[in-house]
Length: 231
Image (cartoon, rainbow, N blue to C red):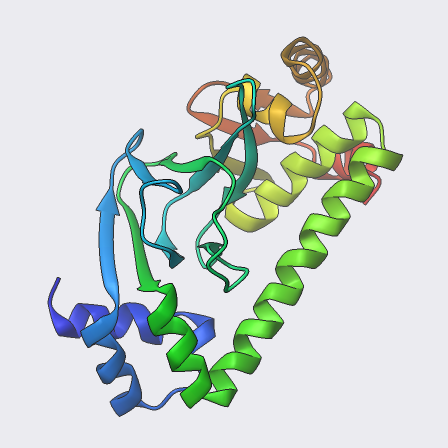
């Protein structure tokens, strides 16, 4: 990837908004860029040199592997999100891997050692990173609270509404979401069964709230979906 394209990818990311043009150009020397297509493995934690990743385009899922060898979705990473060795230490991470959910995924990454050295030199960058991590932890905290205090229908409605707000395209009075998740993926994310997700989606389709298929989800009635989500 040429230096000019690297520069514009960095300039467009909110984390680097405090840096000057010449500082961004210097980063182009040490930052790595990667492209991936749907289904491609981005990394395995037990084989990668520790890195911090910034997703520029597309969507990725982080999959954890437990001690029994079972896999489950830990997080969905969307454009602008950070992932990887976010704790900024060298302790071995639990077994996990990242996989592209969409085509034309673009991400950039720093070696953990390079990123730590960069933040020491740039206090404003360190502050921006701290703010982004604060937002991330707040989202994780909200997700845990939803799991504890809200039922499956509310969790699914909230998930779909947030997805629509973040990535949906408004057409007339409907919102169209490019669907890159399976029903089983959604079930894992909101911690319920696939059967429950299927039952709720079918019920909401029958009531004219949404339309679901493998390629897209159309929200016809945002007010009713918000009511289900208790937004």
